[in-house]
Length: 379
Image (cartoon, rainbow, N blue to C red; front, side, top):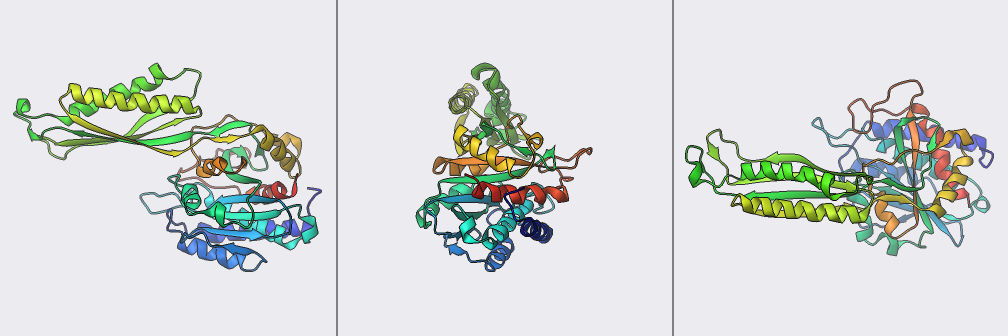
């Protein structure tokens, strides 16, 4: 950590840990992060930052002007995971928010001449459901900025990796995602008169079986992909056939061509199978986010930043995952890089994202805060 002021960084990490402890106690749903964003604004008000009017209630974006010709952006997500017991921080977004607040403390406290660029800090609502980044861009975020960022960095905790490890991966890291909804219309009637009904449940069951062939018959077996049904709803009577049945699910892949092929086959199968069962059918496939993909150019810069924070034996690679992250949306307009920072405790089994037992090692901030700072300070 030779590039950092040791005492100031220790202070930034300590403050970040306190922020995380406070934020953890007030989890809020996507686009309802009112107390969270109020807290962020209050903390940011203590620093010489320019607040950007995003046009969104719970997004907070601020700008540290060092008078430089380049701006580097950092992003954290602020919402919690929806559960049956209300929102809970089971994905670590509280730690992401806290670490970005810690980086603000450090970067805004050093002498301006030590900053090689301006810094933009994005506290993004609505990552769960992968809609927040798109909403920010649709509200004209890029056009409202004093300077177009040259690049953007994001960090997500990774419980499967030990605290102190930084995962720097080149190429696809997290998957492209689309969600689908299939509506099957039949003809309701009493179960004792099946010949006078058109039962959408039978059609739905056949469609679900047909969907299982999308991966096995339409995708290169060497390409990771998912096309899965997550829910089916139809009727509530034990004696009657319902009029409608509904199927929902999602498609995930790293390869865009495979993604489009899966969408086409899913739609065709649902329409043709419904027709064979004398039902009508509507299929809505909604594209949510592209794949998170780290370019070679950004990879080299990220490695340099990681080397400023941890020793080389703690900079590791990892297989990508078929989970999705709307950080990918920024990559459509700004060169982007997404790190994973280990949040597990060495020697212990750590619960994955969204698990009720999920937690983050308290030493996570000691890596996350300086890594964010190094991404700004390193060229």
